[in-house]
Picture 1 (cartoon, rainbow, N blue to C red):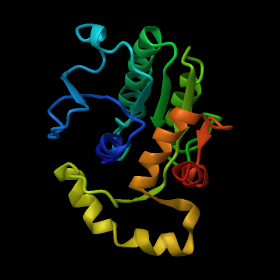
Picture 2: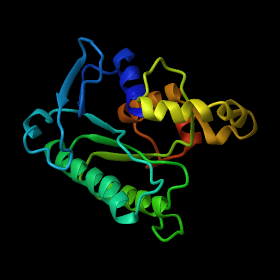
Picture 3: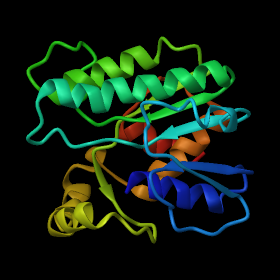
Picture 4: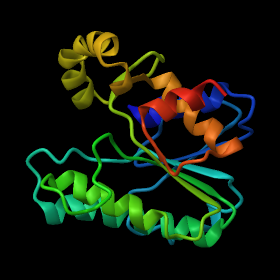
Length: 211
């Protein structure tokens, strides 16, 4: 859902000249700005690496839920996949800004009790070591879907039954809820203008969305 929201906003934004989407299936959009690569194995980009050069930013929105998953498998799909993908891009585009969709509550110390938070923290920390121009770890919490996106059916069913609580949370805990539009705008704006922090919490997302 986040990836589609970011894509939608990129296609509307005058600061974005071209968008390359890499996915396992077509994103379903038709736009003169848009190029697509359909690729099955995100652990091996060798077959498409020649098409990944010359880009200013990467918005990495892939991710899996840790629910019911053991740490080694979650690490493989979160840490190893992300770092492998990012390492390839850093080699091809050293002037690139890399924006990683992480999550509120991520554990930068890598020593906490929550498995997912430790793995995300390790991922964030090691992304910052790669030779990109800039890396931003973006930590949304609750996300209001204010853009006309088409979430994947499995996710949408889950989201539909839980989404009623987000407007309530926005009223009582505004620093834990952002809109999908603001999240997407923040990622675009931070890639253009930079920011004073590498880790973007909800308050930073809101600031950056208004640039």
